[in-house]
Image (cartoon, rainbow, N blue to C red):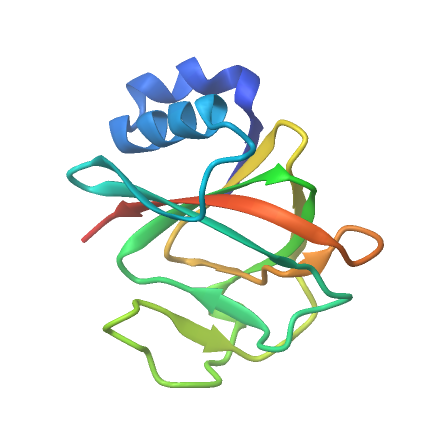
Length: 150
């Protein structure tokens, strides 16, 4: 997992083109962008969603085997606790169709607040727990870049 600001997008150009193109999508997105899925490259897409954050989520952590998540709030902010999968116990079987597993809630290893120029990148080994409020619960609009990995 790593955390950075949109000011440093050019750094990612030499690391991974899908992440770089996804960050450009985020940086150039209008806050009024319609909800939905937007193709970016052959192996990356953007998913635009909105929801109300909560004092904590109902499902614990989630992780994906075949995508890297680049997450950013284009409206509002969101607190995302995270933990390495080695510390987590699955609370369900892996859903291959949707590529996710949920894991029990445990004490977080760390946390990040996304939005206000800050994004987070979660790799397959990073359990992350979205939907948490950064302070008071409230509305967010979020862009998640899904980058395919083997």
